[in-house]
Image 1 (cartoon, rainbow, N blue to C red):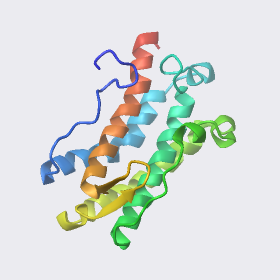
Image 2: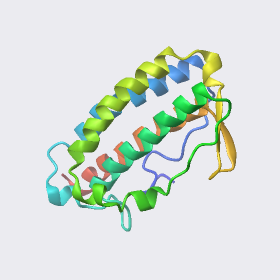
Image 3: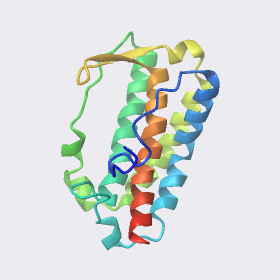
Image 4: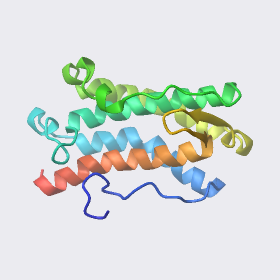
Length: 175
């Protein structure tokens, strides 16, 4: 997996959901907007239109995807905290990456969304009790029940994963 451009930081880790790990994961989520901004800083429109790997999304699509994905995750957290094991609505991320708001809107819109969203999401995550991290939702696409503790770990990884798509592309291209 080390040389697999799809997974520049490897696949999701299976670290246990401990209080210490949660603090690390929340910090990764909190820092995502700044890290993503740093990753794209100074890139030209041509560079933003470059796929991070052959047959992969462009940098532009990656940034919009992160906003789409993290908005969905935030809503899933809110549902799980306010309902008893809700079934969430999966979405086709590859099709979302092709919609006109992705192709026609500058990434600054998604960077702004992420700034506000992560401010609220981090406040929520930092306020949650250990029992709340045990709350669940059902993901029909995965046919699996997930805890919010598992999801904070996943989205910590997701934040680092997509940022690394951009930073590793920059390294390979000497940008």
